[in-house]
Amino acid sequence: MTSLQKNTPSNNLIVEQKGSRLVVDSRIIAHGLGIEHRAFMQTIKKYEPRIEQRFGVITFEMSKPLEGSQGGRPEKFAWLTEEQATFLMTLSRNTDQVVDCKANLVDAFSQARQVIPQLTDENETLRLMLALERERNLGRQLDNTMLQMHGDRIVLALRGQSDIIVEKETIVTEIVEPDTGKSTKILTANQLKRVIKDRTGQNLKSAKQFTDALRKSGRDDLLVPVRRSGVTEYVPPDKINEAIQVVYGKMRQGLIGE
Image (spheres, rainbow, N blue to C red):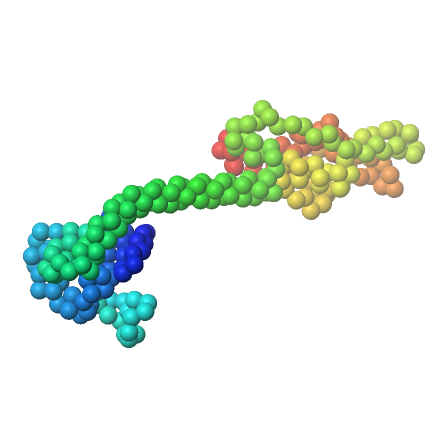
């Protein structure tokens, strides 16, 4: 609910927006006219059919008394439009207080019609900005989740930005066999795990898990045996991309929809 307060020496008029209508509390009008609210409500009920026929339905509500009023029990009051309040005011004798109340009412509604639409526009702008920020946050959260699960290659591919994938330099290890002096470049278990994480987002439990998957796929050619204390199979750097495609290719195709 949006409200605009108009202060005067003898009155405190608050025009509020309820739905599409600008209204004022009948208790405030009664105070401005210098009469008891109970008597004012009796007048409203007496002329209710005529008022609603000419100026629309009157909205009634139960609420605690206004601040500064006597008593604390909930009381019934009416939300009056400018036309409804003005009609009811015409039923009072034009004392100086009544004339001031009428003038204050016209002034308050006039200001409300100028200020409240501006506040509504500002609220709508703020609502749209908050909604946009929520969408951005959700997008960032999704990107982070996708990066953690599938790596930057998958995220860029899903965006149609595969052309901006930047190859990272792969740190490799060179092993020299003591018996033959043969030099072989390989990826150690830790190096392999880092490469898998960077390129797919997957956490590899062990190098053996990866080599077993290659062997199960019938791609022993992507492994190179290295004799140290025994024979251990490694993935050479020049074959890592193809090896990743073999092991994780089906998952990637399912995700992208290839």
